[in-house]
Amino acid sequence: MLAAAARRSGVRVPLKRSFATATDVAGLKVATLNNGQPTASISLIVKAGSRFESKPGVAHALKNFAFKNTSDKSSLRIVREAELFGGVLSSTLGREHLALTAEFLPGDEAYFAELLSSLATSTKFTTHELNESVTSAVHAESLAALSSPAAHAVELAHTIAFRRGLGRPLFASPHSSITAEDVKSFAATAFSQGNIAVLGTGIDGNVLTKLVEKYFTGLASSTTSSASASQYFGGETRIDAPGAPTIFIGYGTTSPAPTLAVLASLLDPTPSLKWTTGTSPLAALPEGATAQVVHLPYTDAALFGVVVQAQTVDGVKEAGKAVVQALKNVASGSVKDEEVKKAIAKAKFAAASTIESRDGLLTAFAPQLLANTGTTLDALFTSFDKVSASAFSQATSELIKSKPTYVSIGEAHSMPFADELGL
Amino acid sequence: MSGPLGLSLAPQIRASRSLYKFFLPIAQSYANIAGYRRMGLKYDDLLVEERPDVQKALSRLDKRESYDRVFRLKTAFQYSILHHDLPKDKWLKESDDKRYLTPVIEEVAQEDSERLAWDTMKVEAK
Image (tube, rainbow over all chains, first blue to last red):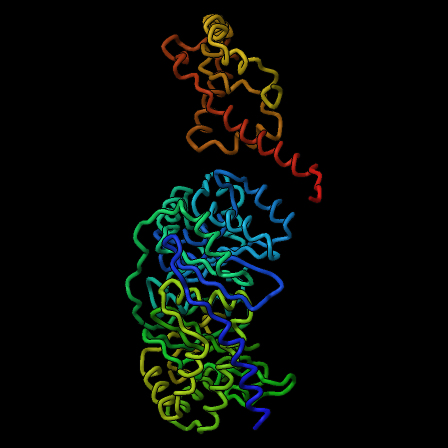
């Protein structure tokens, strides 16, 4: 009892401190999270994901245009100065948001805040940089990402599930013809006040507020980017490609609920203890087959699915059938109450451990920060706790009533079709 | 003063109004006597291109400009072989003799010198 209470209080304290409410500074939303980390970071979260792009591939090009020549600093100077400060600069692209992040030692925040503001306001977007470094980086990233059949399957699944908006490919196709002007005009709309939020970690809230007031004054105050509401379609696609036979079985929804996260942790075959098989319904797949649960929440939709890979086509077919059967079992309500409780606990841990890392924090809080809907981890935990076994199986049965999204990548002449797996 | 474009006193002359006025007619007649305009060439077509920085600058020209450059050079080679000038109506007009390459070379040279400066910098602890 005492141990439980101590554990609870041990958890509560960091939770309360974990989330600062976003404040409006100079038209931007600014939030800080200071747990006394040994390093600090500032991230610009920009509504410039592939969902908002004006031309296919332009968001990916913009991501790679980060830290290039600006009107006051050359890209070489940006890199060398960041090296002198011992900082790390990175840009990450999601379907909804682009994040430009600078990580550094506490005390150097003024330099990096100024750098991020100059990126947002005065990047030059020259044609020679596009030709000499950006395009090659874009192609290399696309090639590297899509050479993994699992990543390719998830990318295709988005296109089938949502078609436009969220369905737009994250990685530019090698055939896209992006010009520097395209990137420039996309950036001009993206880098405006309503589209940017600033997230600081390991930095005092007042300090960051002052820096934002000082440096982020030159942003255009045009209207915020908006995309049409997501719609779920579903469907099937088959790609003939070498490599391990891979299938994606999934469903999308335009009303994301906490039950999806619980379903993901219920099915997740990753064992809690190394070298054991775990107790997930997907733990007993045929020999050599692996399943990976994918749960990708977005602001107005979510994609849930399982990526199944095996050595042989027969293996992937058997494993696919097992996955479909497992989903049907959950929907029919055959999951016991304690199993749901276990899944809830796992989902809570996953949600909490995600936000420990900077990347996880960015993905978890970027949408909320821009939409100004602050959710704390406490609120998230409460919503998980409200999931009962019956509500859970009902939500799952509703999810799998919709048209499935099915992707198969492998030898197309022998790969299973969706209906052969029982979808 | 010196760089990929060679030694030049032009900036100093341009800075002084009277010097500029004095040299302008001389410069114009020099350019006409030099005869490259009779071959349909622009001054920037004559710049020494066998150096990495100028090559890089050439790669940065847009498609139209580099096509036109190659066209002018081929025409000039052909007429040089024939020991003829272009027909007079096809001579390059003075107003068309634009420095299309020089600013790009200057930009590349500036990048190179910046890189050199960063590569040889000395860090002093404050």
